[in-house]
Length: 247
Ligand code: SF4
Image (tube, rainbow, N blue to C red):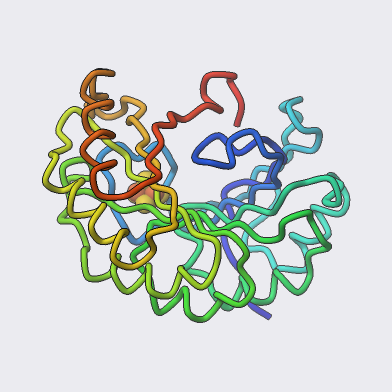
């Protein structure tokens, strides 16, 4: 029986990308294989407890001991949330694809939502995605530009990842900062146009953190214009859950 260390489980609205506003149950896995300068997520790989919000929006948290089995997580979800009126279950992180054996088992335990399993991933583990792709319905993949993360962009990993992810509904999210260069955005746009031209490309202005500065609106609009010359569906969507003070 696989086990995993989880950060939190809660029911809320999706705050990013084209599914913004959709109701989801979020399962946040602990630990990540990447290191982004603007990261606002705890990356402790083995937290002692998982925080569960029992009543959506009420902050009535309970701390449950880690690690947890898929059966335990499914039971928590059954106890506190009604999945039948949720859009989907979001597997998020950290990086959920560090836990593929766990995810395969977890999916078997979960009752139905309206749209199934939603994966939020940094797009750097294509072989891991292959292991679980048949159980995933929608993929939100990041392209990690070096100007934003402070780490070289893993172009080859992103290329391989898109080739696997395009079997499912896919959109790509790019966090843009005051340092984002047109050339790297163009390269990302060309990659998407080549491999998954129907996919939506989301430009997400960074929420300032750890000294990373957001670009001015004029710059974000300029970046969108440059990307639109390459790929047809490019949207600017900030992190909306923070605007409403939601998890
Ligand atoms: S990939 Fe996500 S969780 Fe990992 S370091 Fe970057 S922002 Fe944080």
